[in-house]
Length: 516
Image 1 (tube, rainbow, N blue to C red):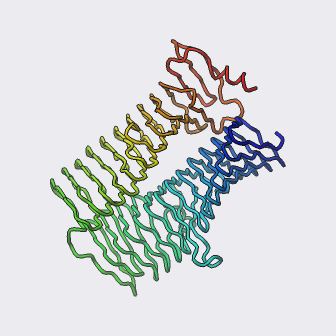
Image 2 (image 1 turned 180 degrees about the horizontal axis):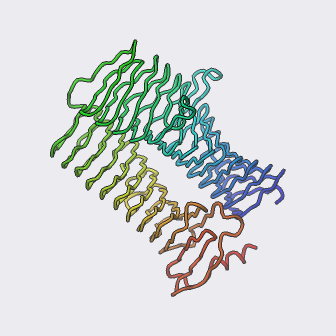
Image 3 (image 1 turned 45 degrees about the vertical axis):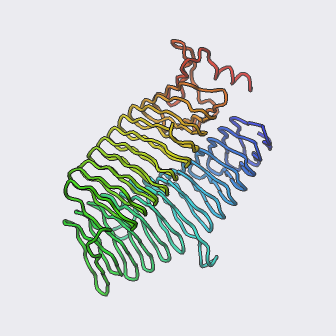
């Protein structure tokens, strides 16, 4: 296509941006399902919006000056630049995303070969780093003294790697996989390098956190099978080593709690200060009720019922096999469910809440929350005005967005899910299972990603103001459409089936003809 400008009130769908050409989406304009080929550019700025853009090898998506990109797919060799108050949400990255100069990336999935580079002034939140993916958080203070870069609520799994350095900060990280290649080099896991800071990290089974010289790790929970290594010159504080977890300290450690069955190894020239037993460091072993005060609290759940409430500061809770009821208050929370029947409720701050293998109810706090279902049947509930991310797990999950007024994102899972969207302008992404979706009160987006979907979605209450977004399907995502039992049934090229309940005509085909 030739150079195209999309201005206020205009919508361009399925644009193909070829080498030497550009698509510019300005204030009030909207681009849906654009494909940016090698040498092509899509610029999103001044409040413009791009949904489900696919960036091919050699292509570029540039998001800046309050532009917004949603559900972009950056293929291997492709690039996305987010800067100058630009925002990208829900991107799937096999290429490279650079986030800098007050740019923000939210809920990015980094797959094999993918890179997220968070530079001076950049920030990310809710990223998931998969096998072979890398996120590096460094503002390059040697070049820009005093600059900052940050990442929050990051999940590192299956050989993915997160690195923070030179003034970079990572908060609320869950890491569960690492390996050593060539017998020496760390590949995967979480590395806190020189000048980097981590806070509120959970090192799960198989996970590894390495704190290098002049790196700092604060408030780390090491679960069974998790490992922490602190090099000479590294500093850790507020570490809790659970049964089966271990830490190897060659630097300096303060406020260390080693639970029964945990292991600490102290190297030469190191310094370790153990935390005194008290109200702020608890290992729950019986059927207990904990009413905490105003201090930061870290609690390990036991094998029988546990209830935690009244926490007026930051709360980290990791459930075990007993039933757990945890209600946050005014701080930030990281809540991880276990094998019991758990009720986990967030607080007014930033919340990261994960279901376990048991039946769980996960309730967002009034601040921004990330809720992730586990392998058990899970109820996930939005709450308050924050922009929540709700990700269904592999069980039979129910996602209730009716109590949240923020613009929420919902990802269907691999099980049989029931989803009710809320009062805000929500985004729903179809999954590999079966999902029944009840539309919300505002203009919602229903997205489908080639490679993530393949399941069936029934939409009840699709409105004329709602939008459909397709990513990774090419120019013709729909292979068939027809009316079955009074409802429009659409089949996509990856086998995904979309049923529009109560719509008795093939309206997608009609729209396609209208806009050709």
